[in-house]
Image (cartoon, rainbow, N blue to C red):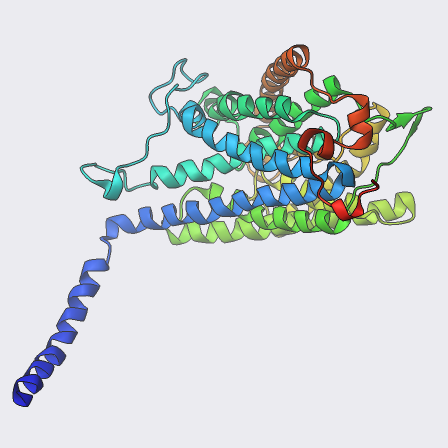
Length: 440
């Protein structure tokens, strides 16, 4: 018996190397699949980085609104993300990327839900030159949700929950996919030569235009503009606002880096690293510019301006994060930081109440970043860039204004005066973010 056991053990030891070689051979992908695997993996990783920006928007807004409205901002950000995910699946993705299925060529995409590849790619001839449908859908969805998040902060502290969410449903399902298809889906702006690498116009200015139209119809918060003066309404938690900014800064590496769209060659990987570096230094340039400028203008640096300066730099570089040198990227971001410092009080002069500064950051700097592309990319035309900014702006303004107006007429946009004074948390949701600090 012992002899048989010894023979069996010896046989197993002899077989182990061959078993190992067989296993290793089984898991090594064919060369033709390696690019597909790496690009798919890139979309998944950069996609969840962009998803994390939802947490950034939530924390930024929770910190910049007053204590009595914090829970409402958290609810809006979670709900808008969920609705955007469903709407982008049902209609948005194929409306934005119709392939050969345009309803109106170059203008209106296809009306059909997203369909993923079968499990294990069974019985399919997959295009191995790009990435899986699931990873591409996941990555692109995050941009759609980001557009909705931009609107949330501007209209805080006075808008009802459900009108806001209905607007986000229509923004995610129709407005965003339609205008994005004009460039990223191969539509008429793409054919015209419009360049917007990761969405200074397609994502950020769209959120900014939608927020601006909502703010105009909604009106300012009670007491914000009184007796010809602007009355500041400090946020509840600058620690959360700072955390939110850093989360957004981190997520932006996925936003811009993933927009390289390929990770199948050494050149693409090098370009992704270049995009990361330029994205980071543009944010730094925006923050430093806002810091220095607020020190000069107000004799004390303003942390909220510095936070928005960093975000302004990020938005500014998003249209072209690949081509600039580190120095040029820093300057592009710095201009964004300067624009925000002047745009915030300019909106106040117009009595347009933007609680978190989303319109200066995403709209003003989105336009700046798009128009700055020809400065570093010789393939870009300033006239084409301007034409595209105006075209997208008109479409979003008109469609958003119509939707906001209908919502205002049918169900009302704004909470009543008592609810606004007491806070939306208890009136709309029946709970507070900080109950132990309640005045009641």
